[in-house]
Length: 70
Image (cartoon, rainbow, N blue to C red; front, side, top):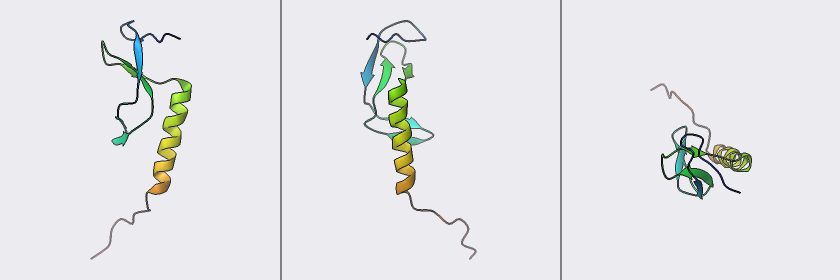
């Protein structure tokens, strides 16, 4: 299936290049990228992968206690 860029109408490619979500690097998740204008989008399945990745990353981070009061 051909994916068309919503911004410029050119063909998009699937890439697994690292990208950021809310300042966090996401690696190994496919996304659609337009090599012409740089627009990036996700299919619903790719968004599910991003959500699963972010959920897993949050579970790996230990709770941090702020303050310390010294």
